[in-house]
Amino acid sequence: MVSIEGLSKAAVLAKLYNASSPAGMGFMMASNGPVLMTVEQAQALLDAGSDASGDYPEGMAALRGNDVYFDYLYGRPLKLDLSSDEEFDPWGFDRDNGGPGTAARLIDELRSSDETNTESTQDAHEVNLNEKVESAMRMAMQMGEPALGMAVLAQIARETLPLPQPPSLPSGKQYLGWCTEEALKYFDSSPTNAIMVFLELVSNDARTRWIMQTDFTVPLLLMGMEGREQMRKMMLGFTVR
Image 1 (tube, rainbow, N blue to C red):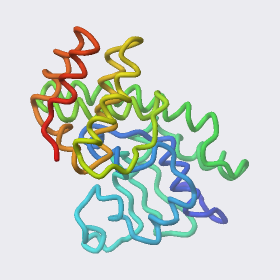
Image 2 (cartoon, one colour):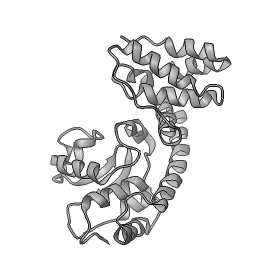
Image 3 (cartoon, helix red, strand yellow):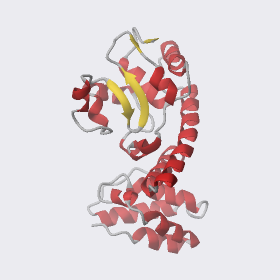
């Protein structure tokens, strides 16, 4: 067991979340949550109950008899039971996030520095992400799930590229146009990055999110790699209102 006596549960949750990474089909939920979790965001989840992230149907926590058990949180495998004020079992977290001793090391660091996003936390996250991206892409190919592959690419874009804040636009067509022009800024340096940015941006609006979930998105975008104007045509070709 790992002792958390005297620590904020919100800080514990934020620390372990930041060290973890989405995994498998969890990449489909990643865009619902932050790349880096603050203590305030973690406290809001604790106040709302573990179903609040949307990873599981509402009421699942009640069925478990536990509102503070975080199995997957925005696609990240935490396996974290915070019902005790004194300790938690690290076995599930360690198994999915770096091996035996990982959770204890992170909590020891939290106890000494009171920081939830240290350099070593981000190093652990990067190792987790690299491993899980590879396995998730294999899963997407084996299962024939292009939407999963697109979700993985979108998460990479979120974490590695400077992305603009989505504006509030009155129509889905206008929002799609904005996504397209923002994504095309990356085309000359990397058409692949342009695709990743486009996928991340469309996932942020309910009117365009379906683009991430259909089988013909990837083939269309790959056709656009011939040139900037062709890519613009492919990106703008999706029907939205």
